[in-house]
Length: 154
Image 1 (spheres, rainbow, N blue to C red):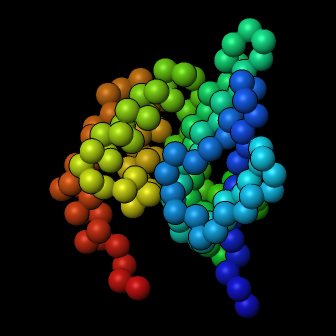
Image 2: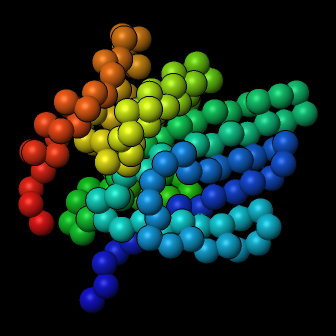
């Protein structure tokens, strides 16, 4: 029996809609046509999907979601464009919060840590702090090393 996989729909329509991955390691990608493709993730994989939409008057939607592909038996959340669903770790909607989160991801990458390897609990903490409009503590190499030591050996 094969593992259940999480599929993510990605779209690019110039000046109208763009749905893309900011980070994550898909196990495979499929190109459907010039504007659409899908990325497939194994259970437990963490990835970031950004959605931007505009109309004739400008930007109408900014969304950023950091999600974790669910393993068999885990609870899923329904998220548009992610089948069958995933565990939502961080979700922001306004341009201000999306930009703040992108700066945070850039800072994590500047320390040579792949954001896909960051502890899921850190992304939940970022979500809560952004919602409360409280300063977000940075993800440091020491924090990352502690998370790696806490992970179960496989």
